[in-house]
Length: 322
Ligand code: DGY
Image (cartoon, rainbow, N blue to C red; front, side):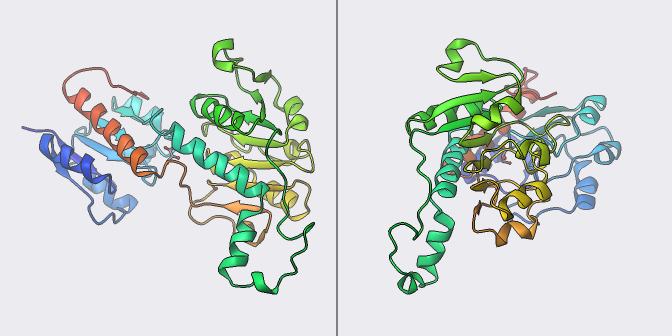
């Protein structure tokens, strides 16, 4: 009997075709999210699931399992929606999708840096709302922003994505400084300067880009205290997880122009982000699309499938979380 797999959301077409050939699979072709209760009911009929970050796989989810589910191939590098401790206790293997999304997320990071510095949100709205014609072509004011080239980028979390962002930023002649739990070996560090202490790094940054996973240590790492150390002209960008930011504190510094701007792809309580962000001209916002390219979403889907293939052939997973 072929293992029975539930795919909780729509994944790339080509990946679905492959999956159907090898497993007895239930796809979600309409991409209609299962409610929490529906998923708990359904999952007990499957040997494996391919999950997405919209699925809440918490302790209660694992406590309700009947012992059939053996493996979760999560489509995403971040797995803060999954209670890993519970999975471990129930002896359920979990894999994620690292590396394959590095370039896509680095692209969006650069886009956020550029968009927030060059006031792209405001400029785009001016044209789209057909109000450009009403504005004086003032050469020192009209959509004049900050130049990115040659500035200093502070990277918080110099892991796989952080290192690629550093490479991309160098094309803009940016100087790279970083804070990480550990200093990188020189070969990976390239010319970047390490700060063991985040608070010592922040005053030296023109741009601050966050690339840490969501863990108890990184919750609200951007808060009132750390934001006080951001230079007034600095820009903050976040493509990691919303939980790293204390929204009240960030919104306060943006409202009162204590920093130049922010570019955010991720939020607390997505998609119901704090509405105050939407009122800010100096905050460029995106709907969590860091990894959203055809190429990357296919690669993520395929990595999840390959992990399941390996699990059901009794081989070690490619990207095992637990
Ligand atoms: C990830 O892979 O964690 C991305 O943020 C998409 O959820």
